[in-house]
Length: 320
Image (tube, rainbow, N blue to C red; front, side, top):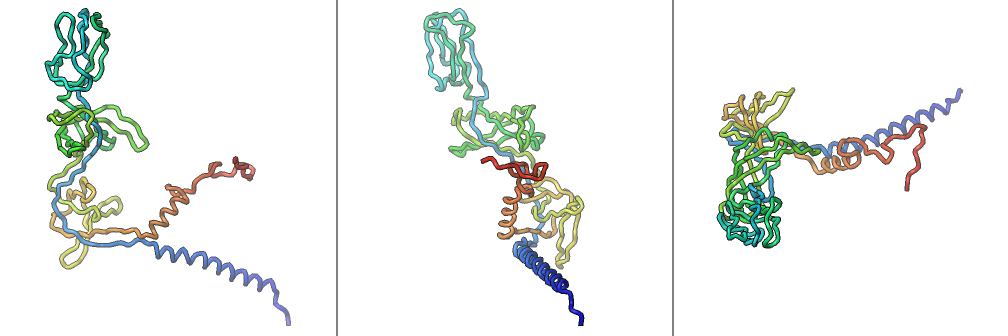
């Protein structure tokens, strides 16, 4: 009787071992996928009428809207300075006294912030001055992104809240820069917000500016979770009284963190589905681990050599 070739047995055993290895390798991944899949909750919400608005907020310090240098009277002789720096000076109050008995007075309520004065009883020249800041009209600066800059204009109303007292003041945009400042996240422009001192404000106080950049009053709206998209067409799933569902195409307007304006497609009396996806702990953990391993962009991070092996197939020596 002819003996079977032992090579055939070896090949069969190797094939079985290979299949076992492949099975063991794929099985944990499959189980992990089941354990880390995200959960989807489907609920319903009533279409409603809302006032939707988007606000832009920026914190900073209060400054004077008017800062100017006033020249001393040339050919007059300086006698003395009558006020101290950073102390309020009332309009008409004497600031400089000349040797001939005349005075330089405050043109408005202000503070003295710097000066260049001659010695006592020396003649004043064009180089001598006092620098003052108005305390009547104040201002703050508001940083506006390039995405929002065309949504604001001079004359827009701004809400100002004092940090220390939570007091609220109304200001207005009086100037918008024409040249932006570039950053990696996008260019920003500066708007000047001007407001009158109510008597409680001091230069250097901190406050927050807030401006409405978009607003739609009393519009039909749905929760953001109700908006779905297919082939660049937005739609909502309308639920009838009997529980039947129908996809209805809609035209959307502005949206905030909670609601989206519906310009057409709904009458305002419908019930719509909301689809909320909750990320499981394992899914979140695995996603973060994957990002840490590969980098945020999904690519494996490059090493000191740019992730490539130099020509010749040999790795260069590590520099210690």
